[in-house]
Length: 306
Ligand code: ASP
Ligand code: CP
Figure 1 (tube, rainbow, N blue to C red):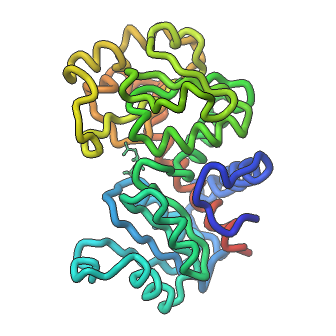
Figure 2: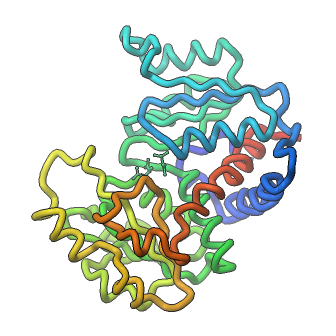
């Protein structure tokens, strides 16, 4: 088993499938009256969050607790980071307290990779800048498999602000590893230029959402990440929604079995309309539920739980 989970590229088909299968077993714990396993008793998981999070932080905490690990939640606000303490010194402090795993979210791409050189325990990337978010890709793959029965051969459209999306990058890596075909869809300004030059085999680019919809098994909508935009990437919010927003009429163009995903948080009325977000085709809430099982599986396998 791998020691760290830093990138979707760390996951070969066998490792990814083992995590998804283990997550399916973990999901049965959620249905029990006592939602706990003793697998990580005596182990310590530190959640080190330098960037805001609702789903990822809470689901890692729930996952570690369901496996009976001790959990330390570190948020930058209120810590000695405000006194200028570096990531390395913060990490060494946490290590001195006996962290077996560090779950890190950081605004700088590559921060989890640096951390992995400094600490003895496992490092899990919970989102680094615009770079990667591998556990999101795993929970997305889990959700596709649960809804559609497979990943191999699926056509997945990843739509919107691909340029700033670590979710898109990790999904591109994992989904192509598992045999899906991926089409990136959005305005040219929000699709990375290298995507045209085979970022990975099995990845295509389209600027026309309406043309891609009828051939898609999965449409993964992305949030427009205004907090990462220093320039103007499209004429207006209205224009963006008109070309790339998922609304009722667009949903009707999808094949009957197709699902609509979104990692959250959503901009209701911008990239996704309430009629879609709240429809039975939407997996937004399931993705959050599945995130706990997938993160249980990742912690369990990385820490060699018993
Ligand atoms: N929550 C996801 C992330 O942190 C997606 C998003 O924020 O739009 O990358
Ligand atoms: N999907 C996701 O990572 O959500 P948070 O930013 O709320 O953790």
